[in-house]
Image (tube, rainbow, N blue to C red; front, side):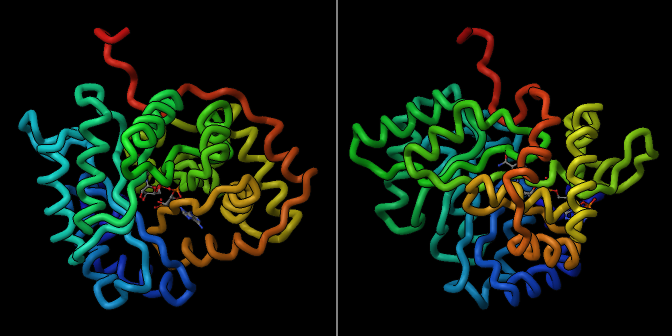
Amino acid sequence: MSFGNSEEWMVEIDKARPIVKRALELGVNFYDTANVYSNGRSEEIVGELLKDHRDEVVIATKVRLKVGEGSNDEGLSRYHIMGQVKKSLRRLRTDRIDLYQTHRWDYSVPIEETLLTLNDLVRQGSVNYIGTSSMFAWQFAKALAVSELLGIASFVSMQNHYNLCYREEEREMIPLCKDRGIALIPWSPLARGFLTGRYKRGGNVDTPRYRSDKYFAERFFRPEDFDVLESVVEIAKEKGVSASQIALAWLLHKGVSAPIIGATRVEHLEDAVSALDVKLSSDDMKRLEEPYKPHRIIGPLPIPEPLN
Ligand SMILES: NC(=O)c1ccc[n+]([C@@H]2O[C@H](COP(=O)([O-])OP(=O)(O)OC[C@H]3O[C@@H](n4cnc5c(N)ncnc54)[C@H](OP(=O)(O)O)[C@@H]3O)[C@@H](O)[C@H]2O)c1
């Protein structure tokens, strides 16, 4: 999502190129994008920068969110998925998407239609595996059951919102994923940059991301988020590493497969890779987790009124 041009904080291909080059050098082999990011530009950048490394990397993209004004320009109908997958393949310059993810639940389409369509894509070879993103746990359990009943391709991964400041997924979704052997690949692992330690309680906030990411200010910056951040910063100081490394190491210690990081500079990426070497004791984990207070739900689309 950080590659593109729809918001001020995003980086175009000139700045994305050295990030991807360094990522490949460091052994990063999993790249996530979506048809909706910067109206397809993110997929184009990823496709261009990975075209000479196609068989060394796993490319994940997504479908569901609104890409136009027409009534069929969004959703998980057969019509929309079949049209969008062709566009994603073209922009990504590839003959197959390794992980094709549904980007939120679609309340207007039976999940059977979506899963049968995705199964067709797997059978025809344009998609290798299917995954999904933020939804309620009951919806995910239903989708897994439908695939099993129909004997068709089943979601293998959950891309959900999970970080030290947003742990609501620990209630239902994460235990469900662990029980079913589903890979956890959380988004916004640094709470959009909040957990990097660049933002101080009561301090002036003026970064491009804060100014132009419409979700950032409203999601974090609660007093209790700063309580969590302060324990992250304290432990980072004790260990002589960065706050981001502590926040990412915490996720790795919680058993996620791969946090989806959003680097906009080469140093962000190097910092993230260094988190693999950070060891946290059970006491560190307790100190990091203790200040957490429940958060309003961020991720799953709310159930539309008439269904209530
Ligand atoms: N499935 C979904 O619905 C969904 C939703 C959101 C995101 N995503 C995916 O998740 C990815 C990551 O999301 P995100 O960008 O919110 O992730 P994030 O890792 O929580 O935040 C990334 C931001 O943190 C800052 N940052 C990162 N490393 C840093 C470091 N070492 N030191 C200082 N600052 C650092 C950068 O801010 P500055 O740019 O301000 O420097 C960067 O933009 C996206 O690119 C997208 O692929 C998916």
